[in-house]
Image (cartoon, helix red, strand yellow):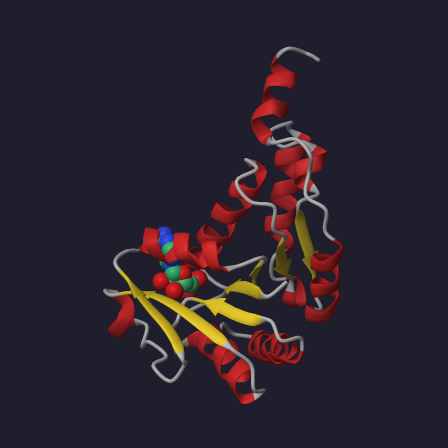
Length: 197
Ligand code: AMP
């Protein structure tokens, strides 16, 4: 893995553990010579992770839409800041540039961005690992809901297995390295279910 995309909050959240873990992940990426791809902002957890990668001597690529350049305070000190026309372009470029996707604690934007790449994996549009960095159980209820989705047969166990999770950044990266994508895409599974095969 050469580049990992991290989706995370444009706010820091309430628990200092969120910031501390963002910094821990940033240092780890720098040590492993993995470029951080992220939303290009200076605010919130986004800012913390980018700063920690730079301080540890690593590389950062930021992708920010023109309209958010001022609002999210673009991190102009990073060497590779790409300014794009829209949110859709931002997500497409982040996906194109990355070989793995992590969501850290964050808000609606974080969840939206992560689930888009996860659904692209489910459709077989990419084969890269996707994981939740579950700091202090932040995503527990979301993971519980995904298990509910699987329990109700809207998601098969092979695709449920695509969602990696760990509370520790290093263990999550280990899971990324060992990850094998599912053989079948979601459409073939849905068709099998429909035909009772
Ligand atoms: P949040 O998790 O809500 O703090 O947002 C994290 C990042 O996601 C910020 O950079 C937001 O601009 C971005 N974001 C919010 N909504 C979307 C969306 N629909 N598509 C792409 N990025 C988004």
